[in-house]
Image (cartoon, rainbow, N blue to C red; front, side, top):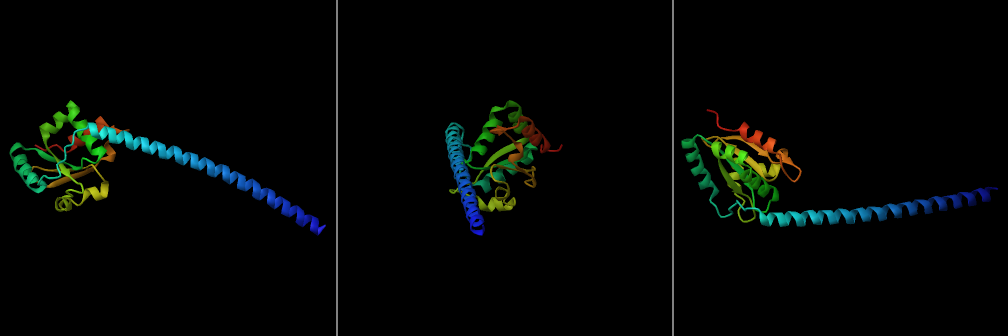
Length: 189
């Protein structure tokens, strides 16, 4: 009887093992299929973003002397009583290009920016990381990614740093959120 129970236990163990192995193989097969679908979707998204990037204006100039440019903007901002809006990022960044395009093609936003800000695109790329300037503003790109928005008052004093992600909506930006952001940091009369 002991041998019969041992044999029955062994057969049961083999059946359980075989069933478990089959389930894992099915699960592994499903996971691989899902992985392939995910990889394909990621590749499609990257391809789509690359195509979109070629069509958008490239506002960042890696060769610019950003320190000199910002000094000149501060002098101009004092005269015009405007704040300075620095959009930090690069032509490599789809979200940077999307934001610039969104502002330039949305009359309501463009009017708000043109009336209240001097707008500057601070480059961050392998060609020119502008490390000294970014350090002056606490390296916001390292903290928040790109684009990141740096608002200076008309004396060049940092008054706000805004990460991009809170302004995003879908594959673009929210008109209401961006409008509120711009209006929150207009110069105080």
